Length: 195
Image (tube, rainbow, N blue to C red; front, side):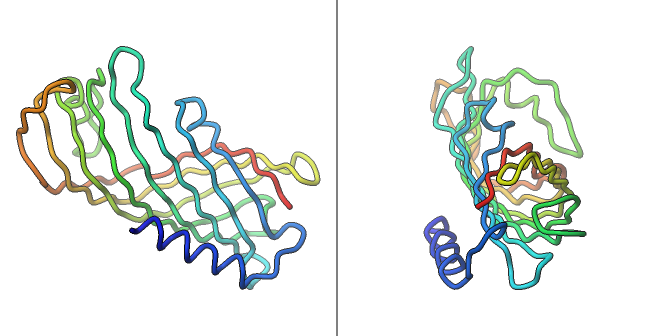
């Protein structure tokens, strides 16, 4: 339902915006490609010369080697303010994010800002999340139509989900429990094609 609303808003934004050279781009995040996560994004110029709107999404239906589960789908709309020319150089951003997840059987000792990811070793978590964040990025012009873009975002996510005994079994430990996350919410190295 939320995904349809984002797509409808995006379609209306594209239809009502006059597209011309350097006002529209498609992109793929190489970091997601490396993890076999299907992803794509589009970015369009806003009403002001320094403003663009970006929306990206990813989907990973696959299990990892060794039985690790890292399934997810999410969407991340973003507004960007370019410090010089759009699609060139430094930019600041504000983004929203939301999606669903199913993760577990991942061997890690990571504990970060109150989140204990070591629980992923012996448990599986499934649920949904929403949140927001801010970011900084840089776009490097490679040619007339190609850019390489780097971005890092920090923010907050609110999640609700279920916890299960293990990745294979279905014994439920708890259901619909809320959790909070503060930290990195976006990491991107994107190849960008400009129209």
